[in-house]
Length: 199
Length: 158
Image (cartoon, rainbow over all chains, first blue to last red; front, side):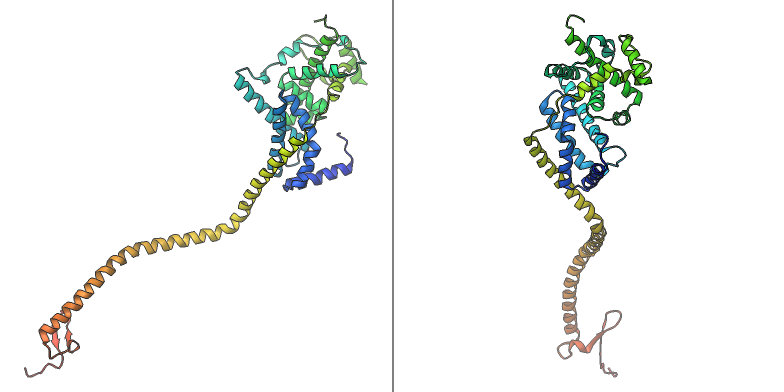
């Protein structure tokens, strides 16, 4: 996905130019290109599917309104994910305020460090079937927003370390450590699933 | 190669020390167990929003576009119309101020002048009649600077 053909890059560049001029047709194509990726990210960042759909719509509306301000310094997908991430965090804060619970953002990291996986418990040739997918999905939902965002952006959306650091306004080292912890958290859940007797 | 060795070291060490991070984070991230999780995450089902969602988005985008177009028009039109509009406004204000002030005064003076003039014409005619009698016409009398009446063609021997 990162290695786009030159023609693809040129056509995307042209598409972005047209979108910056508020061309509705071009923006329609832009939505076609990115809707699945943005929705895939948002749906795993927020638990409610309806909220995810609303947030994804809001991402594209904001992108349309502020496309003229997109300076091209970062990739357009990074810019889109930044909008999506900010909206997810806003929504998460709102939900927490309503429910009167502590912020999801602040939870998890310390806990997750203590839950480092016993790697030997997971067979290397493990095939990801539907059941395991469920375990992985549940683990992703269970971890903190901070870890989840980095894991999804890097491993699912192929966003590089530097771009994630720029997107989340954190150092690259922090991106790497969060990714490591997030993967370890998933691993710990997989280990528990594979070996229920071992805690 | 080096990364793989380091990755193996992380893997062979069993687990990461409690509460700490591996020294070589890049190597740790390239450990097979970490890459396996990465593959799992990548392999998760890709979701795509449905057509209803897309239709709703199109409507919202249309509304947003109208809003943007409206603002664009204002932005484009305002500099072009700004100077003439400001000029026109200034003219209106200037004329309004000028016309409103003297208007009050002139209305007042106009009403005084008409009444005064009617009165003065009446008193002049009356005075002329009193002084000259019916034999002289009004145009045959003149007033001096003090306002006293004198007679033209006044006989010198009187």
